[in-house]
Length: 299
Image (cartoon, rainbow, N blue to C red; front, top):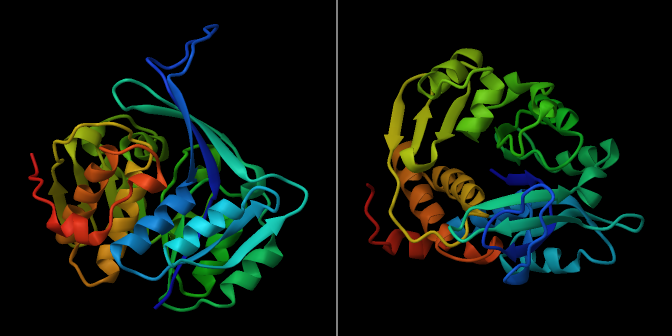
């Protein structure tokens, strides 16, 4: 069984500010840091640090994307399916982190929006029945990737973030795992009633396994046979930038290593809690050894 992450690769420009910039306002940042990021890269690194082998597919600018490929290689992630573009720069994100550790993010797609059918077909030739495919919403051609992967029998995991109208046009009936938060779930369901989101998603996609993260209320899991709930861990919040990606990587990575869903939720929740106590995206993601050795207790 192989694990392919067809996802984004970004340079993250992180500005620490007292508060998020308001319309018409100019403020000074306390600092600027540059990190390797993108939901795709973050999730691949989280998967690798959870203890599984990962293949990453995507694209970077030839002039400025080398640092991202190096970050993946340092984490023993295969980069054979990453293409370099001469005519476009690497995707990047402008991230504001406020005094409470919350963030707001503006994305520039760059090379992430240059996927082609040729690139996708060439990549998927190396994967087949029972292999895992992880996707987010920071690259183009998601509909084609999902259709071709489904035809080949891959197990498709979708983190529909950042949420926009493009998600609703995808063949979501082919998705085997949804990993999403309450805002994304509400947009898909067309309802803001938090109590009914899990039930709504399960009704819309009865064959899928759904992982719904609920911030301070923890996380819920549902499949055709059971529903599970797991609480959060109390940690000092420094930067939430890669928390969701860390959770996704550790949840799937734990399942692939034979842990049941309840234990996967626990390990993923601990990993995400550790990540928010650190600055940056890739730099905040822990290793499985640290997660297993953690003494954090769920609230």
